[in-house]
Length: 192
Image (cartoon, rainbow, N blue to C red; front, side):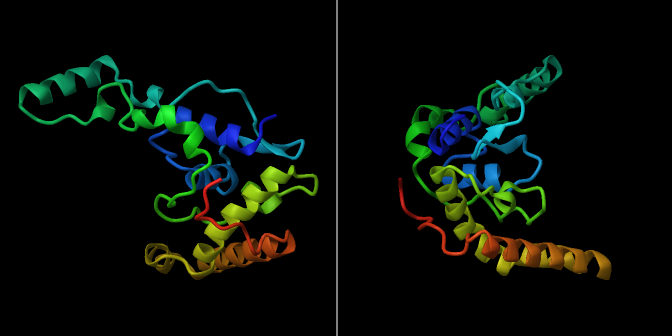
């Protein structure tokens, strides 16, 4: 089992191109359902050990390398992420500090779903994980209460039944946050 900072540090070290601060990592761990993490012993733990990092995504196959070489010969710039290295690799050594540093959420909050850990915080949650849940709830709650225009535009193309389902999911998630006492939250802009 690991405390919040260790878990976030491991996530940032492994995937700095996806999670460059505490807020982004907590969002992934507690709000994105089906991410491979579960509650265990009052802490968030990986369901299965996985030593892969983003480098497995950034590593090119032989075919892709030929395409990159051809692009270079044609004088085109090739992003670092296409050369078998992570474009955010410089953040890896800073992971311990970043695990304690709140920051902006990349994009919008993931829509609420019954599979997200934030909505299933167990009563025996370790104090640091409880504080982390309060912290991320303070970030996502306003975004769930007032969805972004892009999300509203997406809802506009759904059927009435689909829109009703999403409204119920959002209302249910907000009610669950209230029932769990995750309404005030920590100051999301405060460094730890």
